[in-house]
Amino acid sequence: MSITFHMATPNFAFEARDVDISQPLSAADVAQLRKGWLDAGGVLFLRKQDITPDQHIDFSRHFGNVYDQGPVNNPALAGYYLEGYPQIFQVTNKKLADGRPVGREDAGTYWHSDASWQPEPPTGSLLYARELPSTGGDTIFANMYQAYETLSEPMKKMLEGLEAQHTLLSAVLQTSYAKEYVGKLDQAQSKNAVHPVIKTHPETGRKLLFVNPGFTSHIIGLPRDESKAILDYLFAHSTKPDNVYRHVWQLGDLLMWDNRSVMHYAVPNYKAFGIRYMHRTTIKGIPQ
Ligand code: OGA
Ligand code: MN
Image 1: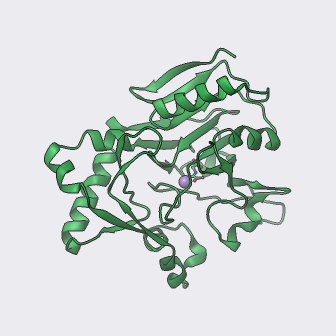
Image 2 (image 1 turned 180 degrees about the horizontal axis):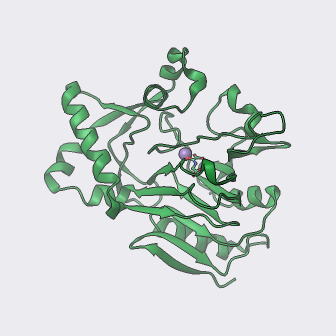
């Protein structure tokens, strides 16, 4: 295939064209897509793909190991996987005839990096649009390389070497997400990890800012008010219009994000405008 890449917004988020992932890809195609994904700052999308769950999983395997039952070991989510496909998580407002949910309705309706409360969060996810409302339901991405690079030099210097606490508890306390942990806050608290505030991406070697409003509770070693002021500033800085790409979904879009270098936000404003039905695979590790 002769794949071409097109920037969706300055220096962030590329569309790969002339790719049909229902067909076998050569090693060179895969290498080109991986390079495009990394060069794009970590958001790459392909339009008009017509793929089965098996093809979605096979395509995902080119980029890492595919999780079974996702990165979040939570029995409450077990019913949200596609029947017969524990690799495919359903994000949707669709309901069964008896009113039971088909998948998770409010996955990530706030700024976050997936499961950053794990010591080794997932590498990324590949989200495929199967049904869409007439309007709304966009996903917004923030480029955390650029967030780092556009900090002032004194601010970069101050943050270097600091570490932050990430915990699922933070999201449970702040959002309607993970309702199943309400009343079980000790469980949500036990899901936690410490990460450097400034990380180096393992593949690109570029520095990036690694804090997110969903899961980052505080910067370790700073007084509470200082930590809060700095994190609030970093969150506002990272999510400035200059630093984000808003993906307006079309049917058949397959979008992959690099969970190590972007934050994302699923905009839950579409509920009165129809069904949004997405299939998601999540990958871990880097193929050798
Ligand atoms: C997720 C998520 C985004 C979306 O699945 O991790 O945040 O737009 N979803 O559905
Ligand atoms: Mn998410």
